[in-house]
Length: 241
Picture 1 (spheres, rainbow, N blue to C red):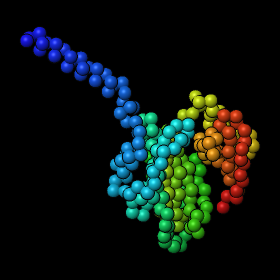
Picture 2 (picture 1 turned 120 degrees about the vertical axis):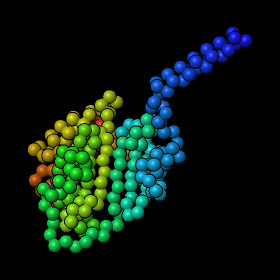
Picture 3 (picture 1 turned 135 degrees about the vertical axis):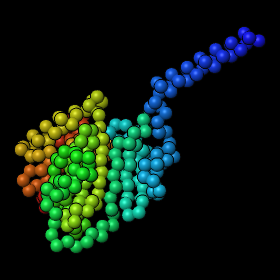
Picture 4 (picture 1 turned 180 degrees about the vertical axis):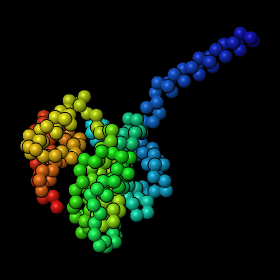
């Protein structure tokens, strides 16, 4: 009987060790998203009391992701999770119905910069551009901090925040892509002396591309570059209001 108890204790002990090793070695597996239901649950935990309006599984930046759209009050949210480890890789919201009050003037760029830095945890401001959006004069701000890039839009009349978004930089140079540095260099070869405000990896009709946005003088440029060959696929030029 004592022998049986010793054997039972031994198997329980070794079983607990094996289980603890499995948990320690597989933290990503525990957080992995394998269904739309899991993705919905994570998004609703992140944006409390929100209603999911759209949910889909997709491929982005060369990996499988879950994209969730939600609504809460007057805001519409967009969240993207990486399926392999459940990590939130992009988050944003906007006010689709913009009832902005009339203002006698506009806030200055320096004031807008302070507002943007406060909203992004003192991120580095890359660009501040003044443009009309839905008839309202706004400041569009690009910022960067660590691996996050931010896009914000403020109503120029009062400084009210209308849109907010951050994205994690994609690590795709190991997959045979040219990399963001090379994409930036190629874009600047087409528009010399321009200022790059964004370099983002994306897929366009199944083709991996880098979207590069630049400013030069009174114009904004968007260059779409094939992520593997470096070929310039699209070069758009637009007046910067």
